[in-house]
Every structure is written in C-alpha cells, then in structure tokens.
Length: 214
Image (cartoon, rainbow, N blue to C red):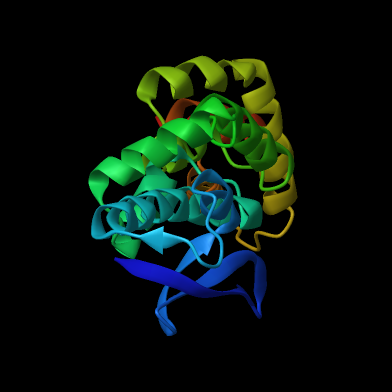
C-alpha cells in the first residue's frame, strides 16, 4: 500500500499533475484522471489501483497526443494512426483513441478529402490524377476518393488545363513544334492532368496534325 503524500501541478502544463507516493515521485496524470479517481493527498493506493490509474493515464495520453497532432494540422485516419504507431503506443489503445476522435469528428476522412480537393484545385492547380494519387497515399478509401473527386467535372478540368497551358506556352522559347508540344505536355502531365486532357489541351493551343502527343 502506498499513500499520496504530495500532488503538484506540472510547471509547463497545468492540466497535468505529479503524484508523489510515500514522499517519492510516483507518476504523473492528466486532470481527467485526477477527477475520475478522486486522487487527493492522504489517499492510500494498492498496487491494483495504481495499475488501473496508469492504464487509464496511458489511454488518455494516446487521445491527447491525437488532439495535439490534429491541432497543428488536419490528418487522415491513416496518417494519425501511423504517427501513433511510430510514437510507440499499443495497438489496442490506438484503436480506442482513433474511435473516440472519430466520434467527436476530430477525424473525418470524407471532409478531409473534400478540403484537400478544393485546396489543390484553387491553390495548387493540380490535375485530377495528381490529386487522386496524393489522397491514396494519405490512406483515404478508394470509394471516398472516387465520390468526392466528382466535383471536378471534365469541363472544369479542361478549362484549368487550358489556362495553365496557355500561360506556360507563352514562356516556351522553342521554334520546333514537336519540341514545343513535348515541353507543354510534360508540364501539364507534371501538374497531374490526365493524358487525354493533356492531348486535347495541347491540340487546342498548338494547331497540329500529329498523332497522340503523349
């Protein structure tokens, strides 16, 4: 049996407390654990209760870590789960934390997908292919990607490719038509546009009778 002889705030985090047992440092806990277990000076803890407290503390630590990561930057479930694994948390605790974060809507792959698509259209001018590839790498489910990517119509995709291609073409200093086409095509492919879209765009910008450009 061990007695709580001292409880103190952590200097850099007023939501956490250091617990001293028999005048020696025992462990630290989140404020929610303090409340749940009614920890106070003079309270006597047996080994079983201490183990329960530490287990509960570990559980809340995974959740709080997730909140900390998400407060800095939006993440997909896959990305956050990977960071938790690298941090060394137990799989079962990761599952519970992820589930709780999803219940509170702190993780929402569908909304993340929508936001990412809008950002890459408006800020980065990425084509559909590049956007989809990035979302796959972030662990978004294929069915979610295919549904959300529908906001990009073929017409809007071709319009964006044309605007970007027109601007790029004005900076291409090349007299040879084939070389000019190749540079323009490579640029649009690099921006992530589908090959059919690139072909159509280049043909509109450069009058040619050549076969497929890319």
